[in-house]
Length: 144
Image (cartoon, rainbow, N blue to C red; front, side, top):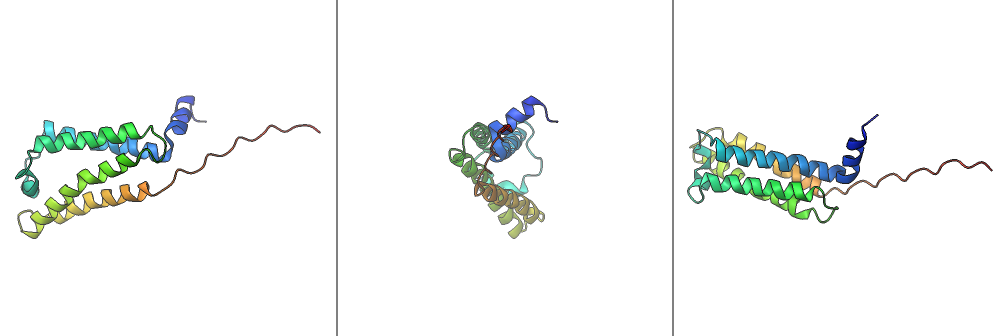
């Protein structure tokens, strides 16, 4: 039997909200990692870093994560900004790593690009799913 707090969180968030809460947390951690411990191998990021410093990208990841975490508690339909923000921050990274691989600067760039692209596609798929209807409470049996 699930505890009361888990039931309450399940009802409050729903499946879409739980997804946004999880991915928002991960996006925030990715951003924090970019700021606090930048990657030593930045060959795949030259396209991005020539335009915007890594610290700014880190804050953009954190911002997208916060938007998703806040939106996790909103009803379906009001969470659309989170489902836009999460893949929107990923796409420049997909393109940068793909270009770096294509130019031969980062041989594993296609792998990183595919991973980030897969995450973005997964987010877009979940964005199109509706929250399943909640089961109605059964009426207690009445003696006739």
